[in-house]
Length: 81
Image 1 (cartoon, rainbow, N blue to C red):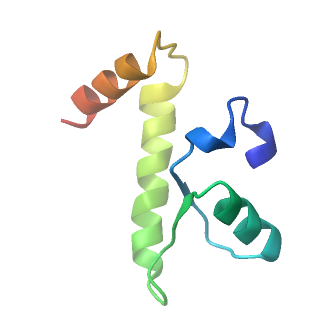
Image 2 (cartoon, helix red, strand yellow):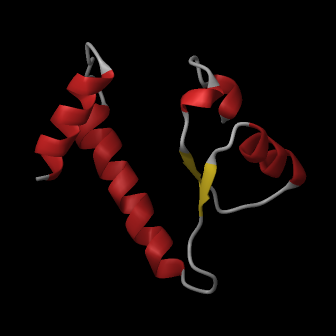
């Protein structure tokens, strides 16, 4: 996942991951990336997150080009509201 990122990892603030392994732990710690996890023994919050990510990718991001991060943030805020 991280190998496909074209900008530096230092720009990433959070990553959602269901698994933990030594390599993932080292990458997150090295780049000071906060880990977002589902609550233990609660599959429902992960389902909500995955559904939200899918809708965001298919309805909002797919095919879009943003001139800047500010444009992306503004459009995403408008789409959510």
